[in-house]
Length: 202
Image (cartoon, rainbow, N blue to C red; front, top):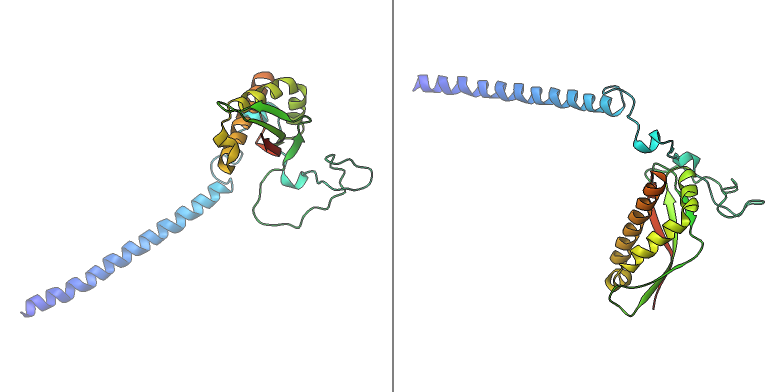
């Protein structure tokens, strides 16, 4: 029995040493992996500079949030011109990384709904994180853009226009239609969102 007791006592410390080494090894791997991941995220590993996107190669520049035009009813500036009259908000955490440039389409859009006696009339505004070139492209190709919007509205159903989820889906479809038109005409879309400034169903 004494041999069995000694064997049991010898086995117990060995297990503890094995677990301790395993925990220390896992801890070291975790620390080193976290450090390497942090270095990669900061650009110290993996080339340091990011590859240009097709938009950047085509000359479209994303506008940093710090350069966003601010609205405000200051002197001498029209609404939407960003005359600098508005004060920048206090710094916060989160939010979009890039500024949004907005453009409200002048006329409202009216279209019959698919398989329905109802029709929809909407006002639309567009946003892009890119500089003014994208908005200029929309203005230059406004007839084609308006046609794409009307075609997409004509595919809308009653279900889409009577619920919030349906309106969100419709806004995404309009964004895709506008970007497809701009890509065909200018080689690049750049519109990130469509917003409804008015929405009437009759």
